[in-house]
Every structure is written in C-alpha cells, then in structure tokens.
Length: 493
Figure (spheres, one colour):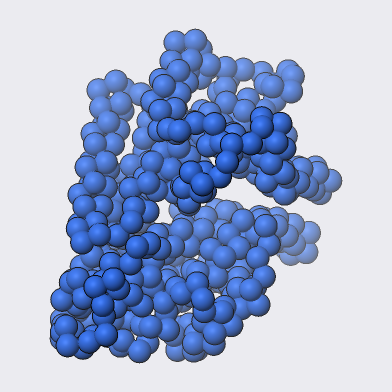
C-alpha cells in the first residue's frame, strides 16, 4: 500500500470531519498540544529510571555546552527525535492519528512509572536542607515548552506549503481559528514569559534618562528590524509570493517583534506594574474595533497609502502587545522562587487562570457572538492564545509534578533532578531567534527551488513521500545547526 493510500485510510477512520474545514476546533488544538505535553512526560519518566543518566541532563549553568553534548549519545538522540520530532510529522500531517499517538505516549509513560521503584531518602544521604529547595528554580518544563513551540513554528511555516499539511491548520483569511493562527500568538506569549526574567532585572537596574532608554531600546531591536527589512527586500527582488492580508504590503512579523522589544523595554524602565496595562489596553483596543469601525477598516479598507497598505501589521501590534504582557504575568507565576508548596501552588494558580480564560472565551464567542480574527488580533483571539498556552503550561507542570512525586519522597529531591531539558530543545532555545530566521530563509529557498528547478512548480503538487522527505531534511538541518552552535557555545543575537 502506498503512503498516500495509507494516509487516506487513516483519514476515513478519523473521528474528525474529513472535509476541507477552514478552521481547527478548540478540541483539536487541545489534543494537538496534549501530544507534546505527553512527549515531555515520557522523556521525564525515562530519565528518572536512571539517576546517572538523569544527572547528565541537568541544566547546570557551570557545565560547558561541549560537555553536555558529549553526553548525547546516538541512542539518546534517536530517543529524543522519536519523542519530540516524530509526533509532529504524525499528528501535523494527519489529525486522525492524534488519538493513537497520545494513547501510545500516555501508556508508555505510565508503564515507565509502574516499572520503577520509588527512590528512598537514604539514597541521597548528602542532600542538605538548603539543597531541598534551591533559592532559584530554572523550571526545565518551561524550556521544553519554549523549545517545542519553536520547533512546531518552524515546521509549520514550511509544511503549510505541502499537501500533507491539513488545510484546517493553515491561517484563516478573515475569521476563525486554526493551528497556525494560534501559533503566532503562542510565539509572542512565550516571548513574554521569558521576558519576565528581564523584568526582574529591572529592580536592580538604576533608572536611566529617557534618551538613554530610547537608544537602548532601538539598539536591542536593531537586528530584528534589519532582518525584517532584508526579508522585505528579498521577497520583492525574488518575486516571492507573500499574502498581503497577513501583515500588509511591507510589514512582516519581524517588524512586530522589533516594536514589541522597543515598547516593552521602555515600559519596564518606567513602570512599576506592567499588569496594569493589560485590561485598559484591551478594553480601548476592542472598543475601537467594535464601535469605531476599526475592525472593518483593517479587514476591508482599500490600500491607498502607507498606513492602509500595512493596516494589519500596524493595528494587530496592539493585540500582540497585550498578549506579550499576559505572557509576562504568567511568567511571574511560573518563575516564583521555590518553596515547599510552590509547585502545587503553581498548578492551582495556572488551573484557575486557564479555566477563567476558557469561561471568558466561551462567553465572548457564544454569548456575545464575537468572531475570532487573527488579522485584527481581537478580544477572542487574545483570550484564545493566552488560554491555550496557559493550559499547555499547566499540563507540562502537572506531568512534571507527577514524575517528581512518583520518583522521590518529596522534598528530598536532588538539585540535579530539578532542571531537565532534552538537549535538542535546549540547543534550539540557545539561538531561538536565529533558528526562526533560518527557518524562514530555508522555507523561501525550498519553495523557490521547487518552483524553478522541478516539474512540480509548487510544493502543493508534490507527492506525500517526497513532501515528508523534504520536511525531514529541513528539520534535520535546523537541528544540526542548533546543536553545532550550542556545542561551540556560539550565540547569535
């Protein structure tokens, strides 16, 4: 049986609608995200089977990258690829496989936990009281979440051009939600979570003059803006097709990231409470969208000048700024110092947040009958992006908590067990922005090569087997470069 015939058979028995739906349902989004939380659970369960192996995965800031990567044996690399990369190909190419993949991952993790006796306190005689609860926690699950989101983003921006990628996962034109729609908000949200570390540094950084702050803000964003301008120039020179309804004629996502960096840098320099901006800014923006015809302008106004040519990028920036601030707020909860009941408290807090956001999402879309729109980044889209990512983080935290208490007589957990990150994901995080840029470049090169040098003329005309091969090669290149840069401790900013 050919690969295409097999995929068709799976689709027939899928519990999901096999029609060309233009949206990804909320249930489907949750099941897809659950897949990668379960991958993390399996990996965490596997390293707790062997304390020696586990210690080699510790994210110790004093260990060199070369030492860490030296421990990544071929068998371990293959295991990480099977857990974190293979599921992407399976569930992102055919949603009908999500139940099979999730059931297998859950069963594998539970089997590992049941096959391993619990460590006893006497196994760790040298654990002092000060070591039980480190004063600072790096939260390995947070790094896994970030790395997973980056790989999903890189995979999707190329996979969407191939026939194996379900149409319902592609970005919507006007209203609705899809996997790639939420992916943009997830990228900004995860950046906000990481940005909370910079917010913490503000407390020990003396206030600078306004001009100095503006200069530092533009300096920190210069590289991102440069990338944005280079992307704009290259797409025009190469006649590379870009949808103007995504960000506009000249705007692109790198410009959004650049302005986010500037605004946030200036705000954290002069404000003691970033959270105070979230609700007022959201209220003002949604009021302008709903009652001052801004939404209609963004979606339907003719492109007659520079502003109207880039209306999606300019105005959606406000929504992304709100999502970034929401990420900062969740980061505040996640990055709290460790105490005896911190992890349990974090689970309860995140559960309250995502359940409240889910209620708000249902109210806005069902009761108020508001439509979700990525192009304008309106209230329902903002709530969906924040809710889904908070839910995913909660899943990661719950699985991390289960592993910790299944393996050790809490609180006697060795410090080396706190911060575990698969090295392929750690390497991706090490140069996240550069890898994202490289993924965009490779995406353009692949599409140009197919158009100019093959008989297919477009990636959408390619057979499934060749599509899988190209995507596998593409991800292999990204991972190889990530690991090589990390091994040599090269960080490209």
